[in-house]
Length: 287
Length: 287
Image (cartoon, rainbow over all chains, first blue to last red; front, side, top):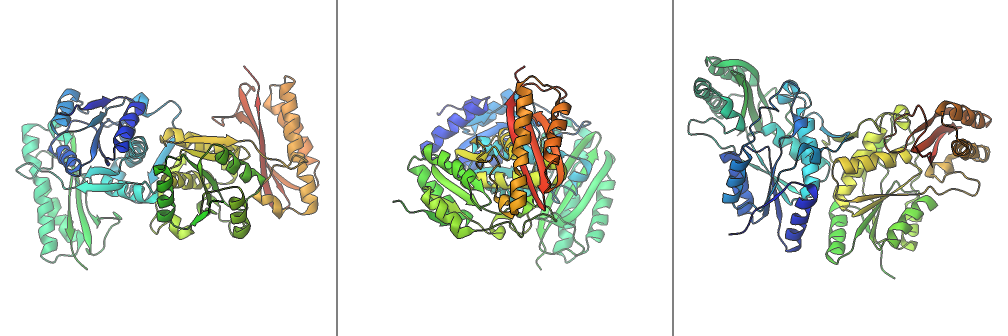
């Protein structure tokens, strides 16, 4: 069995990638914040299947957390994560410190306007600027041919695709389907914050999304009507502490739709107890 | 004699660079807006001397011009530029259209905060965001090992160095000395806008910079005193229509200095008739 390397410095990961590239391999990057679950594993499997030299980055990126968010309590089970990566046949885990990633005096930011403004952008100011900036950095550090992201973070995926195109990064963004628990809840590292009751109630999110999808498939074209039906489904949950948004937008531009057409993204962000959960479905409504 | 290629598309320049890299060459990028003069030629010569496969980009970047600036009248002598590149042994000229560089729907910007705010940043809002963004794009399109910039645009050079470091671009920024006319005027594509009288008076800029340098070398450490002496020299010129700024700042961070120490940048922006001219000198004032 090949030996997995763990690189803690930019210099080290670059040397490993350079050697792999020289030997003719394509490079795959799976950017993560660790606390790996089946969703992340599906991205790793996709990169392995693609024949890539697989680099998984594990970095809880401080610049994408707001001052009142869960940066400090975000789970960091590094041993379990390394074990998973090893089992999946990852070649290199890149696990830098915050100081390695953000040298003193850092003042450069990548901003993806318009796409960063609605939905999570309204509730997490600065979040997507942090995400876009750290991804630009990771792309320049690892120089992958393919970078794999999950559809579960739909707005993030759309923003990174847009950034890669706009800044001409020489790589392909691969967006992989959301992985769900048997009852439909989208896997997320934050699910472990949920109490048993909250975990149970959280299934309302997927039920609401499926209801919205069904309505579109049955011919409904008014976001307002669909959103109000979804709101009723979610509001029935007793563990719910708030709905940040229920939005139906164009899946690529993330701009609002007066009438549903084309690839529509139905996206939801709610709070169950103190935990914020997001999920989404893309529906092709045709023309 | 080798044949110089002209690439008008991103795809074409990437193919040429890829072939050169496969054959073991380092790649040098000289980003320009054309209207090439001895200043640009010094950058090309530096890249040639370094043994690079030399790519010169010629692109009058619309996003770095303000709405009332000289984008439309900026000189575009493309045949003369190509002739110069050929004579200098350039391998590829990358001369894309605005549509090739900025696809419809572009919304991503690279912002280098703090360094973009003072000096030209005050007088040309959005200018350095446009510069940083187009350089990030060119870096991703050409993937150079070395990118060459002129010290004449001191703030631009500092910003690009900072951006390359902050976003971990895998390349080295090489800043080359300002090239001057015999009477000291820094070469600039905008000098051709000057009338004979304005051209004559424009020598006051370099005389003021040299006076400032002399004062520091003689022990002066107060920016205020030096700037007021420089202002007197420049104000004596009859073609002068305005002084945007005379600044003495830290050469790397571009932040103001109460007392001159270390590598100090003396930078000037003035208007002669309708033409805006900039120039600078770096002085090492020690500790």
